[in-house]
Image 1 (cartoon, rainbow, N blue to C red):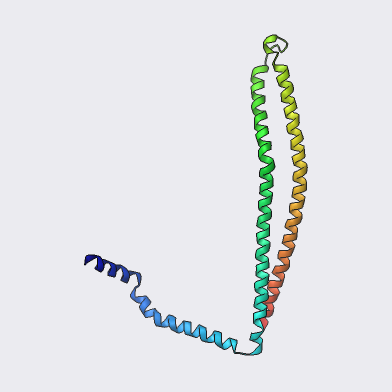
Image 2: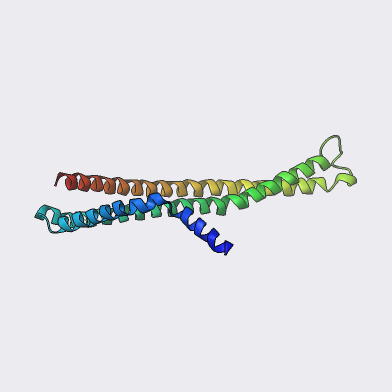
Length: 181
């Protein structure tokens, strides 16, 4: 029995007495809103012309949302491009840095590179130089691709900006003409 009284207490706390008093007021407001909506539908001809404007406004708002989605997709493509090309290049650079540190520790200083003990250093240094040249070549290729990609990205983004400004202009024009009626 105690559980039932606890539930009743909990229910009364969820629905305070103020809301019971506000129900008739809220019901009256709802009736007033519905009656004004019905009256405007039967009203003068100028109010009947608004639905096409609102459908045009909805169409333009949808177009603006599509532009935003296209811009988001464009930024994702740009991010994917950076990940696709920079991550492998960073990996190569880190390998080169590690190789350079190892070679510097093994083959630098007052060591005689012509002695048989350090004869491996010259081929290793040559291999390191080839790897560094490969890295620099990849870096130059990446810079060229990045430049082209950034130009394309900027052109697409500028086109989206232009379209969005045009849609915003049309929306503001529709709202101004809608408020003048």
